[in-house]
Image (tube, rainbow, N blue to C red; front, side, top):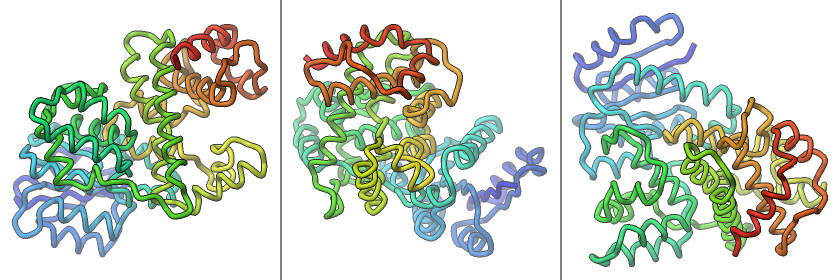
Length: 398
């Protein structure tokens, strides 16, 4: 049974949650703590899979509590449940909360949120990977992007398009902006999947406050064994995959979310470079020695890869299911059934084409393809159009 802890400073709120979730008592072991100190005592007595806390509480507020839980119990998923939307609260909660839910919260929303994070725990990551990802309060951002953003947002006449363009240059920053705009703190009824839409909705002043007040946009400091050029090449590859995705004949309903998925598809590599430098370096050395792909080296050494690590974290942050699935499966689209160029197939294909162009900048039309990729493309029903897609990919780079 999953163990869920609910925290609030008002007993009537906890009683309401207890009544609302009474029918789940046979599959969830639920505890209710009156305030932050009681919550920490409950955690000391036994670990929880999920902690759902109110934000504004006397003594120890929700952000402080979840910060302690992140440091002491990194396996626990951390959810803020709050009726307050002040920017100061949002920026304090961003580094420590995986999800944000607004009060009043319906039983269906609370249930689906907890079920989703529990499913991600089960399906995407082994316990050791959950522990690593649970410690990630922010993703690394390159300092040049941070500096450029601050210079731009301090210009009162800076257009939204310019701010969005700067954010797009940094994969980690893109992920964090999308996380925030899709949180309940800002009360948007539907998911925002474009960065320009996110910046336009939050506003330049809010972006500035976030950059100043939270650790979300902190400059990336790579491990001494990882040259800055490695991280820069990862981001260059992400931009290439997003550009190729933009020119592929993906269904219109999926286009925006496919581009966002492409931009963030290797976010797990940034997590590894920041939080798992030993594994990051070992996988690259192993891949070079065995002459295999890096994700295959990761799977052999760790039992999982950067794809699942990145998808796990982005799923906890509340990105749309289609994006999480595309990122998790961008090396293994055969895991699920597909029809045509949906998000997962498009990101897999764009990633394949980007790697080809990195090896053959003049174009790869007519060149042989790895047998494993050929089999996968045939199973997806798109192999016959490979040269057409290769030509589009080449055009996207010029």
